[in-house]
Image 1 (tube, rainbow, N blue to C red):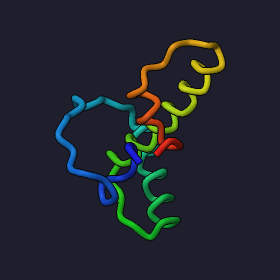
Image 2 (cartoon, helix red, strand yellow):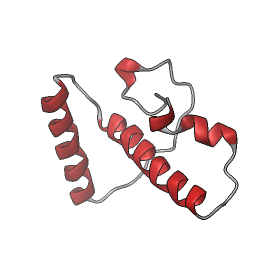
Image 3 (tube, rainbow, N blue to C red):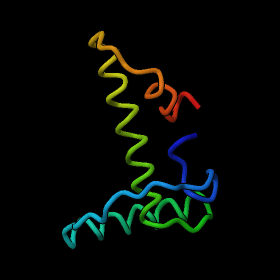
Amino acid sequence: MPFVPKHLDKKRSSIIPPVRVTEEERRVAEWLTERLEKEDGVNYAIADMVRVAIGTLLEKELARAEAAGEAVPEWVKEMAPSKS
């Protein structure tokens, strides 16, 4: 699965520039991290929540694009979490 937390995935070599967030956004990210850690029994980083969010948004947008009959590159389809 392309957007799984780091302990389950291959080595990552690309970097997304740092993102400034509000205090509230940071607290939400920490809360999400804590929830998934408790659920899975694994230590996650906030960066893992970014990966999960990318996968979730990709699935949603891919479904919308396909429903609208838009052309979607094969490599995008292959990256969708549900496709892996």
